[in-house]
Structures are given as structure tokens and as C-alpha cells.
Length: 86
Image (cartoon, rainbow, N blue to C red):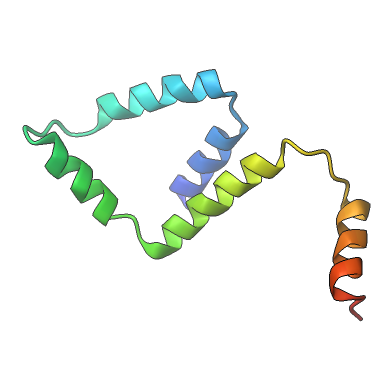
């Protein structure tokens, strides 16, 4: 697991108000650049498609964590939709 993945995992477990604080700290840690737009563009260019997919997956995990679905309920829904495997 990379350092970034460890950080994402920790941030994912924080409540939203704590994430706001972490974001503020991270922004202060970024190198100062006179052209803020250029810095933002550089950062967004460095995000690979794989990282974008990972970040999207993390967003979906957060979104689905709001729903209380047990593993048994998930399996039953998968069997109903796709049939049983194995």
C-alpha cells in the first residue's frame, strides 16, 4: 500500500469536519506559486486515470456507507439479479 493510499484510508475514516481541517493543512503545505491556476492545473494533470478511478471508488464507498446493507442482503440481491455463481 502506498503512502497516498494509507492517507486516503485515514481521511476516509474521518468525520467531515476533521477532513476540512486536513484539507486546510494540506493547502498550506503545497508549494507557493504566484499563479494559482497554473498550480491547480499542474496538480490535476498529475492525477492519473488509475488514481481518478480510485478516488471515484472512494467517493462511492463513502456514499454507500450511508446505507445499512448486510453482506447477506448484498449476496441475495446479486443472486437475484445475476443468478448464482459456482
